[in-house]
Image (cartoon, rainbow, N blue to C red; front, side):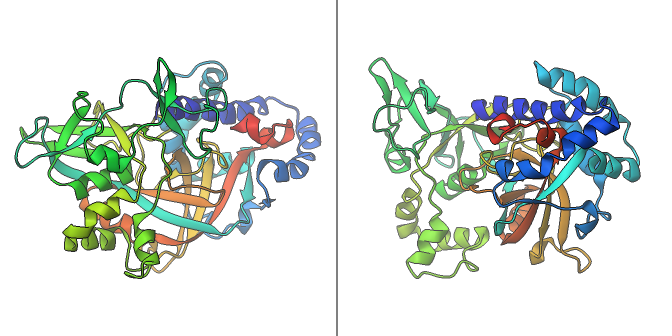
Length: 401
């Protein structure tokens, strides 16, 4: 989403900017200002508390260099205003950090660990790899659409009277902003004939899961690779069709993981169309230039995602660009018998990712990553790392976000 991309870069710049601002400050002044930090935690994160890094299980054993390198990816982009000055000061350090001890010390010296007390929930997502065609054929007949003309994000300043609060996008016309057709209407051809078709897939189930993931790597009929990413949406609320099935008594949440849901859709072709229409939210895509096939898809922060280090969050609660230490007992994420304990970077968003303790782990690209992502539906704990001066200078949630 274009607005999220710009917003993500600004948020990162603000986070890095307040971090850099404190580096030249006298120790006594820093100590005096940080006394105020604890009192401001409740304003930044409701129900949160500061926690010592030594209290974080698995913190010392993590690969902090890997997390710093993910932050470093942000430095490859052009920044403006405070973000530019922040990048000038922070990026050289990130480039020079090679040892785990210095990387870990960087986080501990300049950030406060804030434990989110809300009960957390962790899921996973991935970038599908699918066959596709730039031209419609008998085999490839299901299109992914680009954004229609006039697509706008709805904010307080342009929200029409009586516009539903949960309606996030609309279409600007000479007569004003109007509601876009929802998934069902688009499946019935409501946007046909407008030249929006970007690429064609083999079947509607593949297309539906590309919508859920928000991006895809496509192997075209001529052997080349095309990558598509999020470019907007109709703005209708997201509905989990897996939850619809559970409520109907068709199965349990454990049965309707991503792979379980796909199995059901494929096994019930007469019912799959109606079920997919239950999710009125419809996603639009754009073609993304591929610098390297090894790079991950581009997230809402405007940088390529890194498998198992990039986290999708709710930006209304966790600003993009902040480090988040995630802990979970999800069996598929355990390594050598140990729970998942990893420092990640908030780099993406998602329609279903809502709340202060809600995270979506980017697992990677391809079928194997999809199988892993589909099995992640477990509780989790989230510890957000906030630059110390963001708390000491009186910034309120709106200032960070």
